Picture 1 (tube, rainbow, N blue to C red):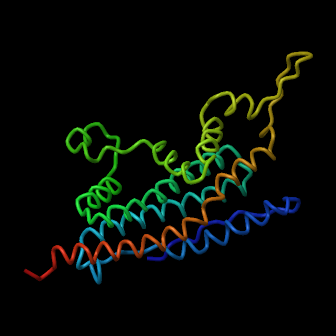
Picture 2: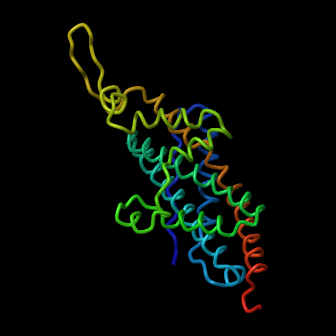
Picture 3: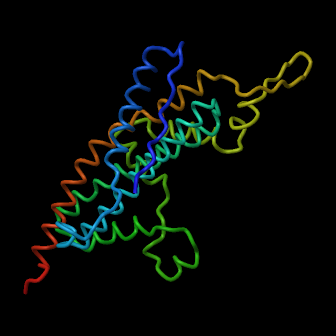
Length: 244
């Protein structure tokens, strides 16, 4: 199966140099990330020796496919000048990145040789849901609140949560997401004039800042690859396939 190549953000004339450099960096990162996506993961090699490593790898690549798909959505809406939809997609990128960064929790569990903890992490990640019927039957699959992941990464990069909250004000049907997004009040005659968007420069900075962490995903993925292989070695050492 051939995966569709994601859309890249168009860099128009007049974009400030610092924004142009960031967008070129983001486009290059998306190109590298899309090339890292697995088309399939077989029960072979380390995954034949460790079901746990197989679970973690499938979770990792599902998230990678999600991030690439979201960046495709960012680019499509950016190029179409559909600013509100672009902000929505950019905020979703922040959420998915925060979960990716949290996956480095594998390192702590691996150091403690906590196979049960690793399995719980993989199981919840793959099947997490808020469906009341499913969580009633299997409460361990209750999806965690995304703000927990956002706050954890904010401890590593102060301001991450604050920027996420700024985007949320635009994403929700609050004043900043409707009245102050599209309307302009003339206080002399109480006339409200509507336009495609107010403050396009501010909105552009909101979007680009939200995406600035994306290239770190590449380093996290490389680290996760190595950690997952170590998980395979640990599980196979404890419970060897074909061994006693």
